[in-house]
Length: 236
Image (cartoon, rainbow, N blue to C red; front, side):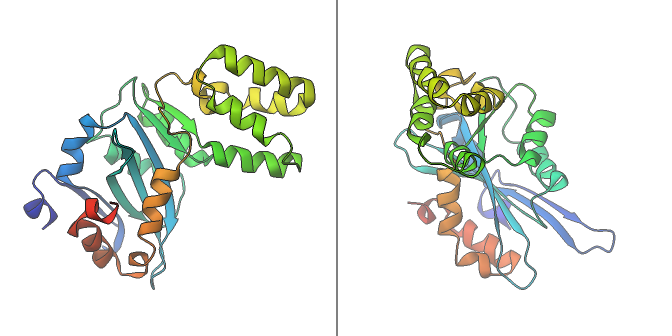
C-alpha cells in the first residue's frame, strides 16, 4: 500500500522460521528522491517501542539547508544488536549509496560502527558530541573539562583545535590521551574526512524519535501508518 500511495517507496519485510514478523524496513519515495538535495550527513539512532510486543524503532534522519529534519528511513527490529543494525544498513544501502562524502553520526554503540564499517566502506562514521561528553563525565568523574572538549569538537580549523587541545593536555593528560585514542576523525569537526556541517550530535534523529513518542505505543502497522500519513508534517 505504501508503494501505491508513495511511488518509489522501498519496503522490506523479514519473517522468522515460523513465519512470524521479525523485521521491517521502509523508506518513502519522496524521502529517497529528495535526499540528493540534503546535507550529506545522516544521523541514526534507535528507540524502544512501548506496545504489547515491545521491539525497537531504528531511524535515519538528515537535515536540509534550513536546518529542518528530513526523515529518510525507519526500521522495526527486536532490539539494538549487531544483526539488527546490519540488517538496517544493508537495506539503507539500497537507497543511499556508499560514497566518500557521506557521513553517519551516531552514539557510541559498537553495533552501529561495526555495520557501517562492513557495508559503507567509503563513507565515514562520526560520534555524537553529547554522548562523548557524557562518557567523559562518567569516566573521569568530573565536568570541569567539558567546555574545553566542546570547543575542541566544534573547532573549524586545525589551528583553533590545537590551541584548545593543548590546554586539555596541560590540564589533564589522561583525558587528552583518551580523546586521542577515541580518534579525532570521529569527534572533532576539523578532522572529519567529510563535511559534518553543524551536525555534531544525534539531536536530529532523537528529535524525530521524540515526536513519535505517542505512536510508539501503537502496534507495528499502526505505527508505520502514522509515519506514512505525512512524515514531513510530522516533523515540521
